[in-house]
Length: 133
Image 1 (tube, rainbow, N blue to C red):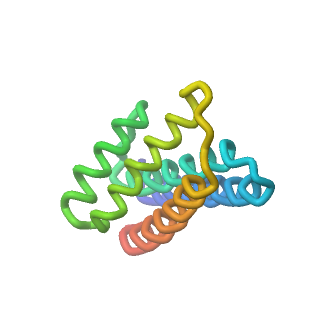
Image 2: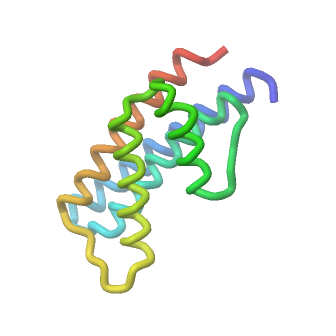
């Protein structure tokens, strides 16, 4: 990929992240917390993938994307340690919500996911804008 294609991919994934956040907020506002939780997680996930697009790195598994992000960006203090913790929690709550029978997402858990998504988008957008070649 050339630099322009990399930039287009990163910005596309960031827009996808923002759309997921809008969906999460809309679902939250009508008390559909399970769906909102899922969309907020995907907002976080796509923001991370937008960052990874800059170095042309990708993985098939969510766990690999998050592990790589934590290793290469959180542990190296490119992003705050607290963000890495919040991303891991987001994945945990999304998996419980999507795969554990009878698990009910609380309003508070969902709000936490949405806040993490907002922070992740803000950080990703800043990073991408500073690192586009």
